Image 1 (cartoon, helix red, strand yellow):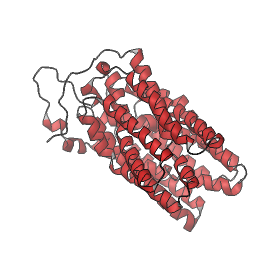
Image 2 (cartoon, one colour):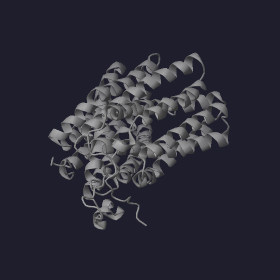
Image 3 (spheres, helix red, strand yellow):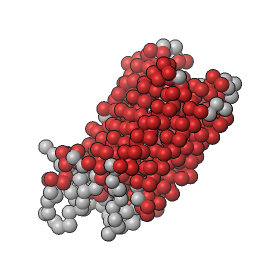
Image 4 (cartoon, one colour):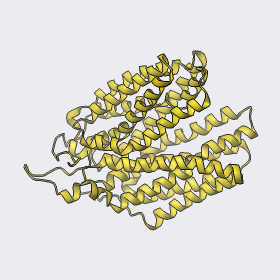
Length: 417
């Protein structure tokens, strides 16, 4: 049985209303707020509940494994859905219940179940946001829309980190999860502001709208096997794997360096290392999306990989902890580029297949594999060969990704019609 939903003309092809666009803005913002609560706050909270590091590591590993293997099924669910809004609202509600589980009953079975459900729900939310965006604005305007999504997600993550950090400090680490649960309410309300009738269902799934009643899509272009044979998608997934392999371990390694060289100021410096890239994403991502429609995708991919390679090289030679923070500007460039380019290029290469979200799941799986290998391999290299060599190795991986984009990755921008 095919996973391809029927190609229909459901949804308006007119310009979406201001209400729907603003609803999407705030949905992305509040969802970033909600997801921030499940970051490092989990380890802090469970530590206060007398959990051992082995138990905490087990829970975090479960979330990571489910998040990895659930990428493609999550995308397939969104492709098969008749209402992305309904799936997204159920996922957000599930995350709210998980947060309450952490806060009210932090015993091992409940926390493991909550970690599992949270990871599974997250696997459909990323594809759902991209699908709703594509269904609202269409392929011609999706670049700038994705840039706007990245801006609001970045602002949401930063503001939530500040809010939850304050709650954890002034109240208790448990309060972070009550706040997270409460934030699911405005998240769902914002999602409700997006008008269902303005989301073109076929367009949201990356399908071609059938021009005549009764016309059937060609199976050769809409099958899952056809999608998996699309060379640009496979090349891009491989390049994203290299991106994460080079990038994921850089900040943890750098945080260790800062701690050893300036232990007193380490928390403040590390906070700035996180804030600087977020600010660059918030400011630059919409511009990246807009210009990618004019200049193409490859120039930005080359810039993103180039910035990552330079960052790795600088981390290997810079010793001043304050200059290490300045180097994070290059992280912001890479983050601004790929926050937009990953869903944008997936939309390009999956065009006409009806499997846009499944294609996102394929690239998401590559992302998870690269990130998992990065921390393990870089940690091993740092222990055996030294941190500087580890950074140089990560820079070399980024340079390999740059060469791959330069030599084999085609331009995927579709000409305006």
